[in-house]
Length: 377
Image 1 (cartoon, rainbow, N blue to C red):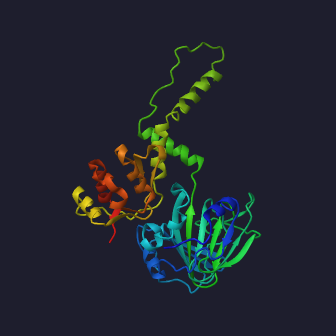
Image 2 (image 1 turned 135 degrees about the vertical axis):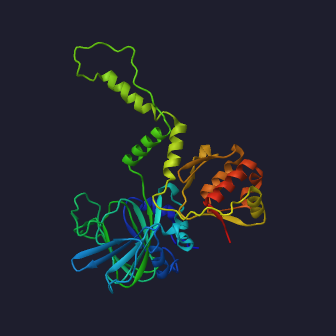
Image 3 (image 1 turned 60 degrees about the horizontal axis):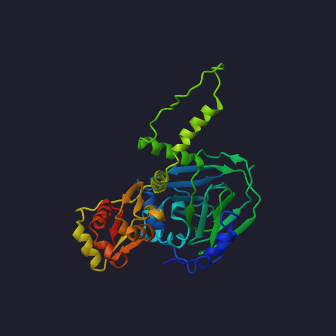
């Protein structure tokens, strides 16, 4: 199990979304949770999001997966696997130390394998990232946050900038962690063959929230009501939008937001939707309720698949949101809902008498049969 060597509370107070920093030895005695061959195997899979990036003199070569590795040059290339925590149980363990941050902000674990000189060039990201250096060494430069960096298009698939004056210029060794907040330019390249493990946190944009809520309103047939004004006055200026009528239309829109339960349902469904494919395998043959009960009673455990997004509102813990859908539990099983969302594994000892509730047992079995939880072997 990976454990951080620093206080997360102190880190949040001093650095989170404020300034970049390098934490030397952030993980003690760090060992790569996945081998280069295993990572390459993932990059060759159809469902896995991967990229190959190589610097060729003054040009760049970018290929999207599934990848092959038959014609790679000796140096100056990398390949990247997104959402590796969805596909590799060992790699997913790197997420656990960062569960002190809100789960709804977590994006994924990205893993990069680089030969000497390999990198993606100077660029700016709009998310928080913790980059842990695995095997090998990597040189990192991070610049100040400014609005006037000039973009440079050396390849359509790369959003690079021309350059920056670094405020951080250092070499990362195994176990070192580089934290970069949104908007800070950075550039890293491998000094020797190396692996990097990036845990990214991505906050939603206003545009995304508005668009998602509009989709929710339409999908649930909410607000299918026309403007109505039986006290409509006559007017001399036909082309005018009167202030009180504009206010009425504004209030129509605002009224869609004046339903706390509706907003909570939308937020739960929206924030549990995943940007990356999940490794979901439906149970075959399906589990029966009594089999689920007996399995847990025998001291076994079910584990949540990597990357599954499962959240709840603390004041409505009997409603859980899993992968974009709402599930309702009996009110007396609210603690079980918290276990499903807060814990990576569930056991009989944790669930206690809640497992005796037929409605909860049926829902748990349903989630297992979908493939969201699987038996720990």
